[in-house]
Structures are given as structure tokens and as C-alpha cells.
Length: 118
Length: 347
Image (cartoon, rainbow over all chains, first blue to last red; front, side, top):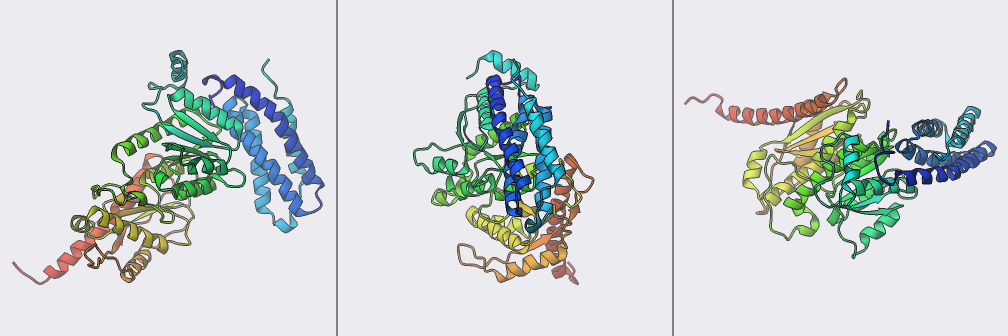
């Protein structure tokens, strides 16, 4: 869909940097997902889900341009899911549903499959 | 500049006949994602001999912009969603700087962020590009900006920005859109066209376009100086904006005394009531020309045209229909006034 990859000079380096950064971002999402699941109060759930969402937003914004379209699409789907969950639920009674955690866990697993081209 | 070979390959890949943009622009790109900044750096280098400055936050961008040693930028690329200060607030801050009152601002945003896109246009954005980037789309948007920058340089249209009031007055054509500053939800006509274009990418069920025309705009234009006419248009824009307060909408001055508006909120405006409310407010507002003579400005309202089931060119046609109906209503009012005095008289 997005045709940046082979058309601009310097794309190979950016792609490498994206993959390196993805490992860091993946851990960030995983740690906030676990923290949201373990959180005892709605405010902490919200803070952690929002942090995961911000990182998903970054991945979704660039993955497609670098030839990782499916990864970007999943990141966007997870991001939208979190936004909707936060919008649809009252801050005072916010919970962390299991299926959302499973979705984020699947995304983290998908990140692990992305590797350097060589 | 990049070797010709790279440009040629890329131009072929993009299906573009013209690869390099015509002249050099100074661009400021702001995004909290370093990957986006790197992509933009490569893109800008590839499209021409431009000078790109990057910042990873709105705060850093403001530091750059407020530095008196920073040369003036021709164009901005702002991410919408950034931590601390977002791109919408940054746009507002930049627009409040007299130097950048009408400098093109392209917002960088995700497809799902439509609510942010609307807010960005209201804050003064010229257009937006969706992430992840499509190279053809990005090239098209930057080319559009290039045209704006070129015409801006040629005509120096910022005669009415605060810092330039002392400069010689330029002539404002009656039919020409005018940039109006610091009025809530009022955007450039070019931005309005871009906004309407992006509407076709989304649901239109709740969207309606409508327009108001200043009655006897031609007479006002002929009898007032350009600055007085601009002030009149600006004051009427403010009164319409105040009248529409509480509704979601964007408005633009399209020229010939006409303001076109778009709402997407599902609101179905009652044009007769709105017109009465605007005219009541105009009657209560004391508008004067430079000689101290009171200006009795009133508006006519056209039809509210729903945008449902429309797309592409027909969206622009709908806006044109709303525009034309307001001008027709204004002409009909003037005609009826004329006919009233002719009633019962014979030659």
C-alpha cells in the first residue's frame, strides 16, 4: 500500500532504525499492558493503557511507510481498541478486559517476528 | 541535491513527470517520532533543494521560532498528536505570530484522527497528510504548498496582518477570497477547499454546507477603501462566528461578500432564523467607515445543502450551490427593495 521503502534514498537505514526501535517499543507496550492488567485502580489502568496507546500510535504511523504494512495495521487496530475502551467507559469504573490484553499480547508477539532483512 | 539518477527512478516510481519542486523552501517539521523526522528528511532532500529544520516537540519548535536569528520558514509540517503540547495548540501559537499568520501548515496525522483533523483546520491548518505516508499524496500536498508559497512571495498578501498595517494598502478585489485572522472557526478559503476534499474520505451523513452574503457587497466595495472593506468583512465574519457559537462548523470568506460554512455535527441549520440572528447582531453593532459614517451591513442567507451521498467534485458543487443561493438571496433582497419603491409608479 505505502511505497516509501524502495523509492527514497536512506530508507534502508531508517528501516534498520525502526526495527531497533521496535524492540524497545515492544517492551514498552508489554510492560504497560501488564501494568494495566495488574493495576488495582481505574486511574492506573487508564494511565498504562494510554501509554501503550501512544506507542502503538507511533508504530502505526510509520510501519506502513517502511514496508511493514500488516504490523502497522495491527498497531492501528490495537490503538483504536484502546481509545474506544477509554472513551466508552467511565474513568471511575474503568476495568482492563482480558480480550484487550490478549489483543495487545498478540501484537507484541507479532513485533517479535519482525527482523532485519539480512 | 540528489543525483539525477535517484530522482529519475523515484519519479518513475511515483508516476510523476515533474520530480523536483521549482524553488527552495525553508520547512520546519515537528514530530515526536524520530522515524517520521528521518522519513521527512529523506523525502524533502529527494523532492528538491529545500532547507529542512526538525524539532521533536512543540516546545522545541517554539524555541526555534521565537529565536530572532532563525530565518523565516515558508512551510510547516506538524504532527497532530504529540505529548505535552499537541500539533493543534502549536498551530494556534504559530498563527498568533504575525510572521506566520498565513504560512502553509500541513498536519501529519493518522487516518483515524478525524476529530483532530477538524480541530487542526479550525486552528489554522492549511491541509493534512495521513500517516503512514503515501509518497504520491505527500508529494501532491507539498506541491500544493509550493504553489501557495510562490503566490505568497509574489503578492505579499499579508497586508492586513497586524505588523504590516503601516505599509501601503493593497487593492482587494471584490471576488477574491480574503484571509481573516483571529476569528473563531474561520479558515482560509484554500484550507476550506482542502477540508471539503477530505470530507469525501469520510462519512457525510451529518454534513451540511450553507452560506451568508453581505447585502450590497458591490456598493460597499466601491465606496470603501480596501482596508475598510476588509474590516467590514472581518467584522461580519466575527458576528456570524458569534451567532454560530455552540455548533461545530468551519467558515471561510469566499469573496463577493459571501461566507461559506460547513458543519458535520448532524446539525440542520434553520437559515431564516440564523439570518435574523446575524442581522439583529449586526444592527446592534456599530460599524463605521473611516469618515465616521455608520455602515448598515446586513446579510442574506442561502439554502442549507446536505452533503449526504455526495463525493469528490459534487461536494464542491454542493458548496458552490450553497454559495450561489446566498448570493441569489442577497440579489433578490436588493431587487425587492428596488421593486418596493417602484410599486404603483408609472413611467
